[in-house]
Length: 112
Length: 111
Image (cartoon, rainbow over all chains, first blue to last red; front, top):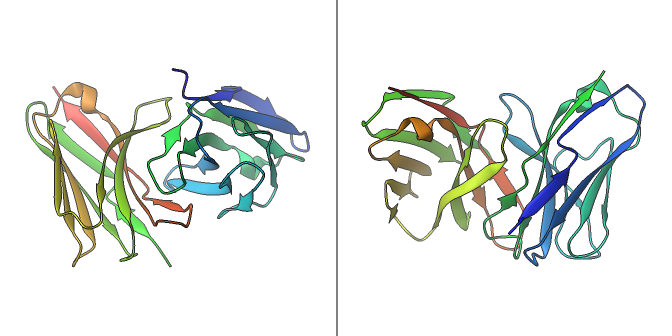
């Protein structure tokens, strides 16, 4: 089983460029999440989707947009990348939003 | 607000037991989790405990929950070099879609 798949694994952007991080899960989970991980700060929630057709802001949503394309896919878009968005991004999913999270392997993003 | 705190580093010798500690502030948490992150990888769920339990054992892993002190611990018996990783404590509350993660404890196992 693939579980949660994220693409790309690595990306370097220049300030002001845009890009979309892709995430797909094959476990038929209802809830999907985007987190960013920064040194010494643990994981911080950017956006989440409780179920297909809904999205909500998390702790650090500024500078990001999301799309829950269907039950499987949840994408994260940076419209105008800034150096402060240099981070490792993780997508995760869970069956119902309370139970355990399943994580992708991450996208390491550098904004120069 | 809700917060989860962990110490940053722990070093143990191979074969010894490791104990990783975590404190949390939200007494209404439903589940408490331990995740493991190896270099360059995502977080992998190790184990979790319902908030109405005191202890859970799973092979080499023992989770202890002290609700009065809001303290969660993970004990790894017979620690191996393959256990070297970052361990995250997390909590969630039913119906909120919100998980709060600690900053992670980096475990280093010395051969």
